[in-house]
Picture 1: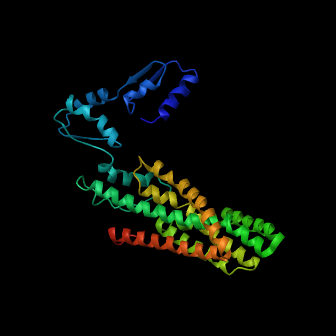
Picture 2: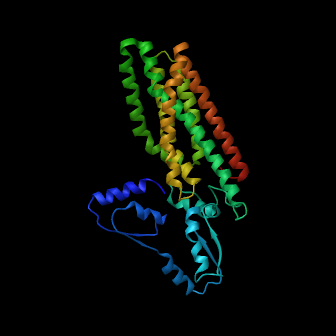
Picture 3: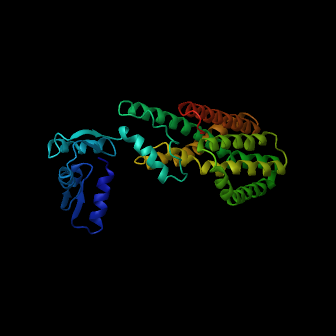
Length: 323
């Protein structure tokens, strides 16, 4: 039971609530968090009564997760005894969720695309789920690397501009970041329209290439023109990255857990920025500042390789499909 339930109970009491009417709490013990009367109702008796009158010879009760499956166990000993052949939880119904996700994600997924559900029978559903989770973790690691690279725009870039142009460095940095903002505003709509032709993973591979070129070229930059060209290139990558990360995650996550998995996105971005400063700071303390761009180039290439390997794995699982 989450302690946040106690917080909600306190908020309700503080707001003047003097009685709570609720239904099907995750755990009955949550009632103890309240200092006011609680009426806890159950929907199961009504649903069981309805199903028992339908004459179904065999039934499978599907719960949203393993905990929910435990809540359905009483149905076995009630009027549905002998008719319930299975009570399944999250892992077994992943194949159903995989097709449903296509209707609620930002990018439509054609039938049969997205997650390969052909192997996901009741016998190996858990194994399949773990395999897809593994691929999702690889994608998250690659995204973290790319966000580490992108973080150079707010750390290494102003330092290099100041080192090259002295007192004019902050002015040029303001110009560069203005171009970044204008690029995002101007390019977002056409880039989203264009990138919809490709799978999110393919777009993320393009992000790695754009970051490698855009940030890597600053290793040789000594004139403002190079910085302007660089910012346009990595700004395009920024737009594609922002509009494809959550789509890839959503398309490979059951709808019941999609919000939780997409919660990784700000964590990925935040972690990339958090670890950037100490690592790059230590690097440029002992080496020329241009070495940070070499590191950014190598890391962007590494992230791209991870995404290419991930795409190759997914292609082997679903021959003939784009990734």
